[in-house]
Image (cartoon, rainbow, N blue to C red; front, top):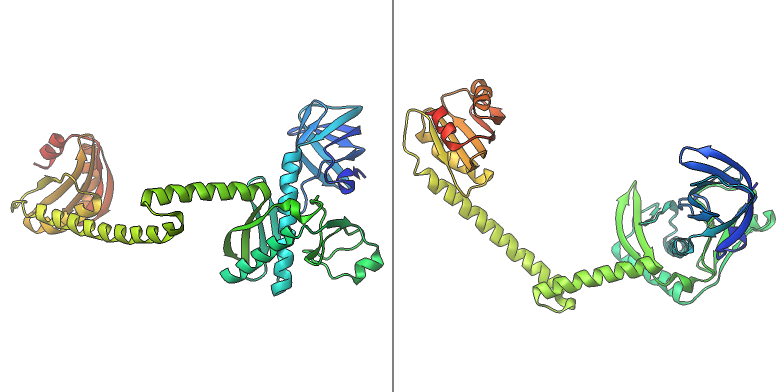
Length: 378
């Protein structure tokens, strides 16, 4: 079995080890060492990356107690391993943050953590029942208070007698050599991953998003540098919004709500005006027993439908309503006397068209010029 140096120190950045096996793999070479500081993908957390000698380590996984390193080139003998510690510390901050917040939620509401994912871009965990906005805010407040108290984070393997006497969180029923992570009175949880030495290193904990998930709730969080990046992004966006609305940042949400109300009102007024314009244009269509081709500039497809409904009674044959320019016309074709399902295929073939519809109306496009359309229906 591979000796796991990350259990001795989560802060070990470099180590030397002996290559025991090197075999070809689909994505490079599978390297087995006598010991390693690389944490493998496990328990919802992604693997460490870094280098072994001149080789880049792209993935690490464990199988039957042996840790495998996927490396870019073959290796032998003694090698120097280097962990990408910035990425490792980022995961340590966010994983410890998840323990703190889940511990607080468990103590407040008795809810279990039933899922966890710690990737390069996001951190999520699932709880067994949904919480209200106020309950989440309280949990976030207490979790950050635990961060500010700079509580020691202890990772250890209790003996069987001690383990049997402890009430600890675990997603699975565990037996044998169980590793626990204790954070003062805040949390006690079974976990195999590296963690920070004290809660103060987490920096801060922020709940980013929540959604209902499988009868419970999925929660997105950020801690440490990730929380700082999120704060900066939100601050910059809020600054741009407040500047655009010419209000202080503290009034931006209220001003934005007013702006959206005004925009919705204007949108409805514009919609009504465009509909009235379409109906007014329809009045200019002369009565005819034959076909009529009408180019309606400035109308969208919704207004074009209003135009057709208003103009069709004046046309005994086929009404062709167009919007667009030569080579790119959108059409609505309607008739009260012609079954368009029998005609539309031939129409499209003749006028480089695409579309279809019902016996009394069809919708589509023509990739031809206006003169050709008028000539065809003339």
